[in-house]
Image 1 (tube, helix red, strand yellow):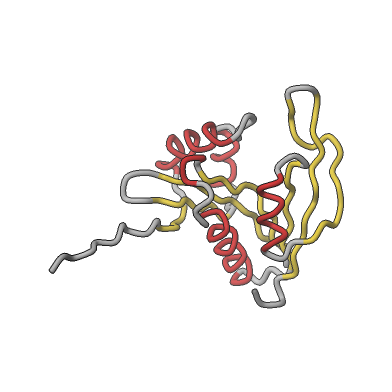
Image 2 (cartoon, one colour):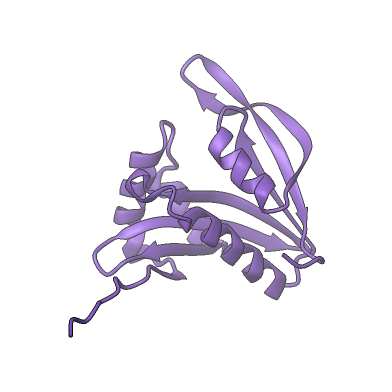
Length: 158
């Protein structure tokens, strides 16, 4: 008889300052215009909800949101390119939405690059709807790029 040993599932846990070197490495591997170390430090300092997706060997991704006055703003969702298309991004967003509900948020908002079709598809699959456009929001190689503003009602179930 042979035993099948399942690989340990990645763990979502709160981010700490000790994670930032690895978080920056994931961010830089994932984006042409990554967040900087001071941005992550500020998010931790001001009390944003900051999480990392961790396997036994490495940090696979991270998510950051702020929650205030009944609103959740998802600020950053990032999965390392080597671990994308495995459902981790979807699980991370659902985790953030549940955490926002526990903090009494009634609506979730986020921005997505107009050219980031994979993220746009994920968010609309998860019930987000377009509510606006931020012109020239993101840095780009030639000027700036627009962001689509998406929102989701958190008072209805998944």
